[in-house]
Length: 428
Ligand code: GLC
Image 1: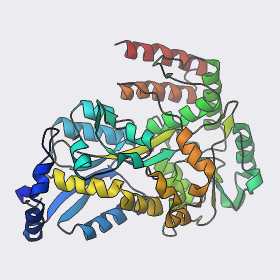
Image 2 (image 1 turned 60 degrees about the vertical axis):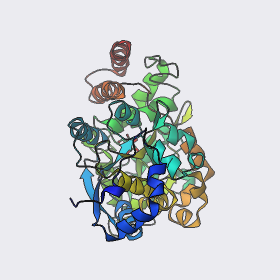
Image 3 (image 1 turned 180 degrees about the vertical axis):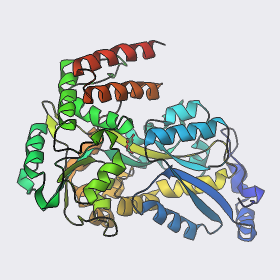
């Protein structure tokens, strides 16, 4: 790693007055021109699209004194989480900037892993009212902003337009089952439907969608465990039925996002449940065999309607970074309008700056962003349970939904066990 001029590596703490840095702006700029390049390390999960590469390229062009080294982390969000926790627990300074899943900021803030951004935000006049307030609040904890929202995720149904006509797109889970059976094998496909059913965080998202579409919940707004309900049971039964059907791959319980998106872009299935990035990936001629053949629709409905799980990623600065000024410059660029535009065009990612949904180039790359239903769907997406010890709650859901899929317990037993274990954890 290259050395840096100290005037640009001052690390504003919560207490540091931002004006200190402003006073020296001119000197800093001059010194910057002469100084050695500063390298910052940016970590995130594997990006199957070109977005990360393009963002770094554009940033380095604009800020020639900062070089961004990309550190690829596991794409499974749970494995990625554990890797950061190990590093940050040891107070390692090897990464400067990292993306955080929406389910982590409170935990990372509380553990002291990330730098509060308020001083930078105020100093640089970032107008937080321009952001989607739900996405912003996911990283607001104890009155401080710990990360900037980069994109919003919501589960969607992608289908092959060359196989399924628009009026045949399934509107309910039962219609999906019929269509998956009917079109399995069409146009060289091997399967009828793809989802993420491995025991990991993505299974929680799939489960939340089935549960909510039948009117069930896991933990309610008051923090009460309400998982043992007829609605939740119905939703999970539908998930178990689909995961055990002959139209999904035999090894569907090993499928996370990369396994499922790869099968889809190789032309192996007429339908997939995935996040918005699937569209950009399916239209990348270097990787996909189904360019221009993909349509997007809301996930099928249960008795209570269609429900998408709310996901998304934020960007934060490591508390242990030795280059916080440069790190902030990168965070500001990536989560600001320029960076989010690149993410949307090359990565198919839904912006957290609502005004970007009107940007023509973004709409050209992602025509479904213009769909009112899509934007409403993002706003109505269902959060995963909100709990201070979310990883433990997620683990309980992952284990019991997996056991139900494997037939090791009935869905009724699974929800009873979830209820018991969650209550124990939340009472602690
Ligand atoms: C996506 C979502 C994230 C979620 C993950 C699960 O990356 O944005 O919130 O936890 O998928 O696999």
